Image 1 (cartoon, rainbow, N blue to C red):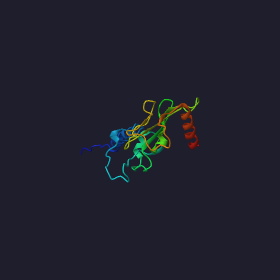
Image 2 (image 1 turned 120 degrees about the horizontal axis):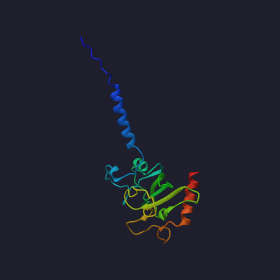
Image 3 (image 1 turned 90 degrees about the vertical axis):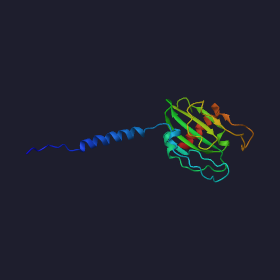
Image 4 (image 1 turned 90 degrees about the horizontal axis):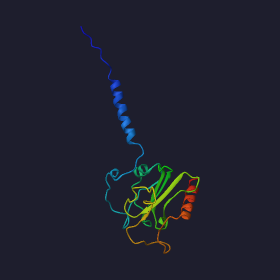
Length: 181
């Protein structure tokens, strides 16, 4: 009688499992968060008139991680804008992303700067008005801006928001560095 030698099927299963894991790992690498990543925004009643949401995170690894794990909460009534602080290395790679709800006073200074001559980090901040308007992170002067769709109101003085000046950025970076230590 003829006996057929049969190869175990576990090596084939291992190859399939490894190829699936490799694809999954590649898909979980750092990348930018896109509008395709927002699967569905559920319209609901707001806790107060004009209620809105911002992506909210503190020192996330990159924009994708920030937006992916941001809590789905309405901003407090005293806020009106979404604030983003993006820290990058000298090549423009994300080191840290922080996002939150903000008042007009907190949005007065936006822009980009290198904190000091020896620092290899770039810092950009931006503010925007609108529901989940802080999808993107500021990466340069062209998108590190304050954008408002309505007349500015609610400031403690009559000054309008300004682009971040070099003196302001040094103060902002000093405060950021101080709070991290």
